[in-house]
Amino acid sequence: MSNFTWQRAVIKVGSALIAPDGNNVSAKYLLPLARFITESRAAGKEVIVVSSGSVAAGRGRVVINHPASIAEKQAMAAIGQMQMMANWQRFFDCPCAQVLLTAEDLRDRTRYVNIKNTLRELLIHEALPIVNENDTVAVAELKVGDNDNLGAYTALVAQADTLIICSDIDGLYTADPRKNPDATLIPVVGSITPEIYCLAGGAGTAMGTGGMRTKIEAADKCAQSGIQTLIVNGRDGKVFDALLKGHCPGTVFSAQQSRQTARSLWLTHTLKTRGVVDIDAGAKRAITERGASLLPSGVIGVNGKFAAGDAIELRCEGQVLAKGLALYDAKDLLQIKGQKSSQIQHILGYDYGEVIVHRDDLVLLP
Ligand SMILES: Nc1ncnc2c1ncn2[C@@H]1O[C@H](COP(=O)(O)OP(=O)(O)O)[C@@H](O)[C@H]1O
Ligand SMILES: N[C@@H](CCC(=O)OP(=O)(O)O)C(=O)O
Figure 1 (cartoon, protein in one colour):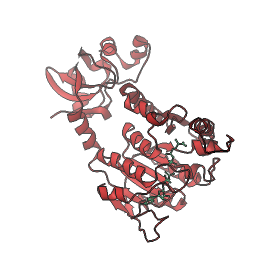
Figure 2: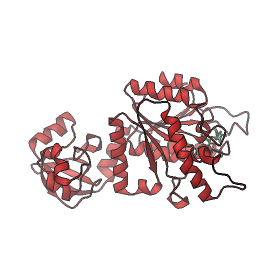
Figure 3: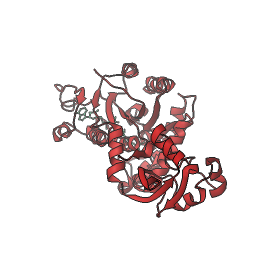
Figure 4: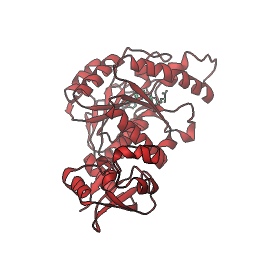
């Protein structure tokens, strides 16, 4: 069993755990998982759930006599999503927050920033975000397609350090153990090579989507962004006791580099800046010495036309010090520069948060 540490995790829960009978929700497998989430949160860790199961949960309520059409599956998802959320809420005193996403939402910069801000705010307010694909509006070309990859995108947008995929199998095996009884569990995958992809077979049950392949794809996306991925058997309550102690009885896919390094490299080298914001000496000290976020009160000048979510440079007395993602566009920032954060709502009529650049989205330049 390998050891792991984490602070913010996305936990992906497959349909087989939500709706083990394939046509209704069940508490059967969720109790140990919910206890793991509650105890982890009590220990100061942060959790976002990506839950499958809406189609399976709604199946029994839509009568069909043939393989379900897309519209019928969408109807099942619309009904089942309610059952699935209500089932989750039963386990928690904190509010569960429904977040429904499509691939389009993740591709569009403004929506991406909104998703990120919403998740951040939900965590601040100690709610439990529960994400699923918005199956009622997403048809093939709009879909992420499977919740393993949705889990990876959610881990990226939420800046998690860990993705935990709870499946109906113990982890990644040398072959699909349902077809090959000699297959053995692989406890650690250091790097995701084409050979690792070759081990993956399809889904194990009629409810599952993607099987092991989509889990490896998800782990690959995460590893490249400095996020580790665990695949564990969510049907085995003892797994969660082990996870609470920092042991992984399944497979750990290591992150290729530290999350901070991956994110800093992305911010520093990949993102083209769209504007320059001049800041005063107090803001400079806060950012460089205390690792603080940039507040509007420290902004003295706004240059360029940038949108919310664009990368900008932060400059003090002619020297560019840092690069970060702006939470407000240039037009808004011109109005709120030099003002107290509490004035933002009053001046703009809305408020995307009290900071201009959050410290998580800021890198100091050498
Ligand atoms: N190399 C492999 N190791 C483990 N499981 C595999 C492998 N190849 C294919 N599988 C299948 O993947 C299934 C898990 O994926 P899936 O059915 O999509 O479930 P989920 O609902 O958890 O996403 C397992 O039950 C197993 O049959
Ligand atoms: N969005 C779909 C889940 C799709 C999916 O990836 O399912 P699974 O392979 O069980 O994680 C639903 O809620 O039914």
